[in-house]
Length: 320
Image (cartoon, rainbow, N blue to C red; front, side, top):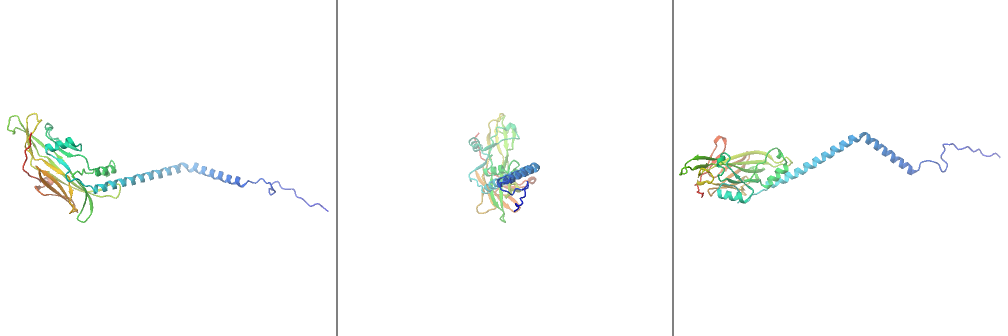
């Protein structure tokens, strides 16, 4: 009986038990190394461009976040401006020498209105003006940043708050006052030889500005401004050649208090004042064309295009 033919195994035949093929773990490791190699190769080729893209996206995200934070700050400050109210007894501007001197000495928020056109009359008793902006307006200016939204916000010391047009549009109304001392000096006239007479006819410029509230970080939109100059008979005083002490012969002091919104008329603001101790008021109305001043007393003129009201009251005397 012949023995069966047995073929010798081929060198590459690994089908027999104990063959040298890679294990499952080795195959997984090979796949991981291949993936890492591909990633490193891709990063080597596209890494710089990818880094620039990530950096640009990061900067854009930071810019959007800063813009959103600014918008929230602007809108919050704007809302406080719209809701602002002043105490009715808050003195904004005072010309009486005694009252002004007390405000200047007792309250750091007031600044003197000194004589600038006549340096030799620097000892003329200065008026006092509330020098600080309302806090909501300061917050709005701070939120808008250095450029203030592209414009300078008014001072807003006389009135700051929301008013409506006759059609019901809500606007931000800001009323400010800019006083200017105008003292002139004359020789003689005091009754005694060597005396100097001083005459002060201060100008008081009122400005009413309307702005449309914003919904973005740009701040309220400027719409229109109206001005009114308030004049009254001049104050006179005498002094010797030193000009250190003045004796008032006729004193016409004016005081402005904080403006008040008319609760019965959403278009109306009342600006109370006192002239020689006598109370008065100037009305401001918001129209579709902008704010308008309506003095309750005095003579209204339009010299050189500037709306002016001249008030009159009996002068008061004042001790030296």
